[in-house]
Length: 212
Image (cartoon, rainbow, N blue to C red):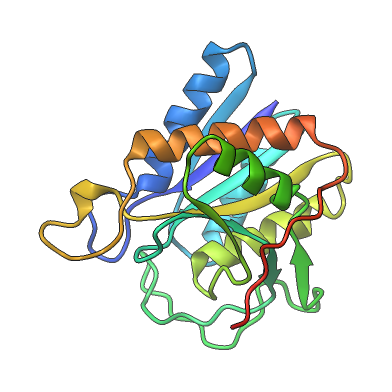
């Protein structure tokens, strides 16, 4: 079974495409006979990780795919690594602005995604969906959830997990000049990632690094 999480709107936006895409992807997987659930997380440090913990505990999952918005990015971003730091550029939806605080006190410096990120990148590219491997999930609530997810799954070795960032949806732009992607395409991409993660054992070797 698959769990896909998205976030509520934040930063003055009326929409968070991560949640809309998570819902559509879960529905498509269920329609295809692949059991999946979608859960919306709050954009709040601490509370988001706790909501994720409850969601994981509520089901018997093989895969957890957390999704968030990275406005300004033009592609689906398969995040490679979560870091143990909260450093907020803007307050979260509860007004919290942690600076240089650990996600988990005493936890490891970082965790790698356990998704086969290169195989997922290849599958997305073959499906015609713009995608990339990202080396940073930032230090806001997306990274907080990514780190919390991998910290929880470290004690559940049978469950794969990782994080994907999505661009703005076109309806968010209102004349602003930013890259965007239709929510339907995001959802299709999440479905491709989920299916690839379930069907792939060892990841493939594929150049997708970064120079900066």
